[in-house]
Amino acid sequence: MTNDILIFAEQRGNKLHPAALQIVTPAKELAIKTGGKVVACVIGGNISAATDAIDQTGVDAIVTVSDAALENYSALTYRSAFAAALERVQPKVALLPATFMGRDLAPRVGARLKAAVATDVVELAIGDDGALDVKRPIYNGKAFASVKFPTDRLALVSVRPNTFPAATGGDSAAREEIPYAAGAGDDRITVKEVAKAGGEVKDVTEADIIVAGGRALKNEENFNILFELAKVLDAAVGASRAACDAGYQPHSRQIGLTGKTVTPMLYIACGISGAIQHLAGMRGSKVIVAINTDKEAPLFKVADYGIVGDLFKVIPAVTEEVMRMKG
View 1 (cartoon, rainbow, N blue to C red):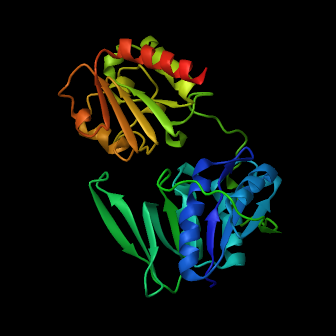
View 2 (view 1 turned 180 degrees about the vertical axis):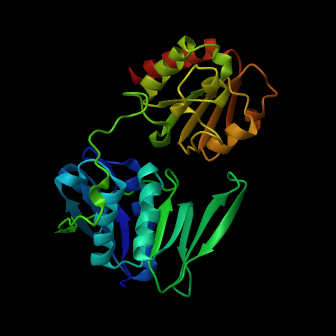
């Protein structure tokens, strides 16, 4: 085992996932403590652009696993490819984004390599004894669990998106290509096409800005004002459980305890009262803006900014102002 820190540079369609740029930041901090290097691993079919993108973040080395069989993500093929990269580099710590892909891949690779695994981590540090110490939220963010890793095995960690700033700058990294060797049984699943929920609309788990609506929107058609604002902000559109249960939006956009957990840089809640189930899915947002006619709505208690007003007047006005500012 080396003192290196390896990151899984997630890419989709040869485009690097923003969370991959973010995990380079804690990787560099850990590498300073361990005295090792930061190594990025890029897996896929055509990954030239994604590899060049991660090369601009200041990583020390890049290992790639490229094959036509890896063009679309499959838990089995990527498990074999990532495990091969880990066995080649022999890092002390491996970091993955806590995206759908990262959450799916981490435990599979951990089981194969008998690694110690922690998920959805928000703090990382190397202790004086050389062991990795991390913190991860539990009970829907109401408390944190401290996890101390053993020093005699690989520490495999998924990091919550938008926890760290994206890394930039640095010299070109040395590159090494690792041949892909399919594992036994990897062909049990064949991914022919990746269908995005909601068509061309951004997924709420991957967006830096989310505009979310509640039951106060009254119907599906009224959600169009949120989509208009989301378009000018390059944001995703989310919804509360009440709005999804009423059929205003598909459950793929539901945010909350029984939906998706999000941590965007900006969360704009429109006509959402803020039940505890909804707060559990978005309370980690960096900045929260609440728009509601009820000044006693629970969401105002956690919001950084609040607007007591009619969303049908406020949202179009905000959209118009954003368009004006963008020229």
